[in-house]
Length: 189
Image 1 (cartoon, rainbow, N blue to C red):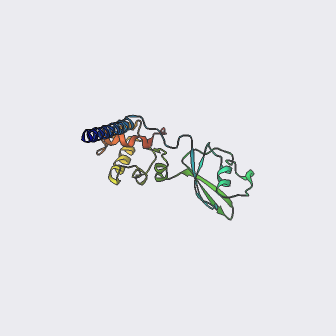
Image 2: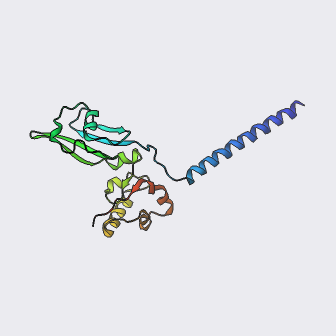
Image 3: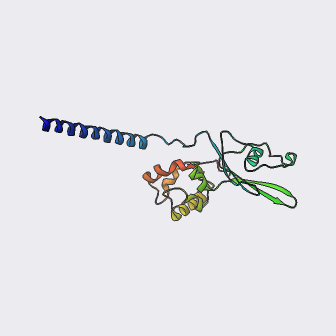
């Protein structure tokens, strides 16, 4: 009687383990098939560097203006009337470099590096990024990045992301893995 009870318990445990394995496999295959969604949806990331007290990347729940960013990176007593862009909104992925000279303070606006963007799950512009920035994308090495830039220059910019598959070394499998890292802004011709 005890031996039968032991066999029933073993069978029940095995059945439970098989069920858990099935659920895990189902969950894994679902996550592969569902469309990509950004991790930090609804958050805005802006980098500030240069002559500020606390340089770095800051997160906001809506697009900040320059004044808000400067104040977040360390209190700043600047004459706001001097800076016409003081109240303009900053997009996620923007970088502000604060430079101080004998003539005053200057704000240089650019994009944060591709390495920061990839880390923060922000897409990089395929038509603007340099070779070094393209290597931030997992699966793209220096030679593939160089091939992307050559193709982009030859075509005077990509029109569709699918054009990446025309590049040697980027097939359908790699394309599926990397496409969500990119965005295409219109090429000005």
